[in-house]
Length: 270
Figure (cartoon, one colour):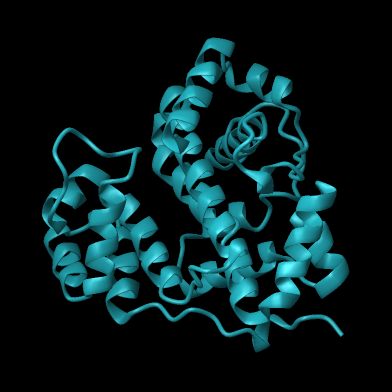
């Protein structure tokens, strides 16, 4: 019998975290209200500061408080901190699966941000967020299923197959479905839920026109570039409707730029 999403224990988002997600989504966010809500949740506040000090954002001086972190991140990226704070609360630091998923998500998010800044800056924050959250349903499955999911994960790595395919065969459910369920709980905008519902299963983009097209092709590019670096086993079995060469052509990504991205990722792993 397969796994039923309704029977999975989902991570609970703090009331402050939910309010922050709603405040960030309005047309004219009130930064003071957002700051106030974050300060009421110590776990969220520390995660916001930690995220602002990540390799993608870190500047010469360390960020040590929430107001400076919000200035550094921008309000949309506070969503990422809410998600990270929520999932870290239930994530098992001793789990090989959890550690691999966290690493994969952060590397993909970094690449998405850098690619988007280059080709379509207006979607950079959303592309980074999708990169961060797109596989986090795997954390939920790992937390709920323990050794059973560890076996599924290890088989995907050993056979260099997509994790989704092995999940579907073994569990009757994929982490993409769990991620989408989690996105509903986090009250994400419809655009992001639509993208998350089809990260791995979608039609080929012949010419990016909409924000959704751009984010899909950016996320796919990030995965395929990461696949060229021997530091992330989760990317080995991932496949997308477009090849990296096709995406380079669609997004006008030069080899020199991709080489710089690879160097940045390698430096972050040193």
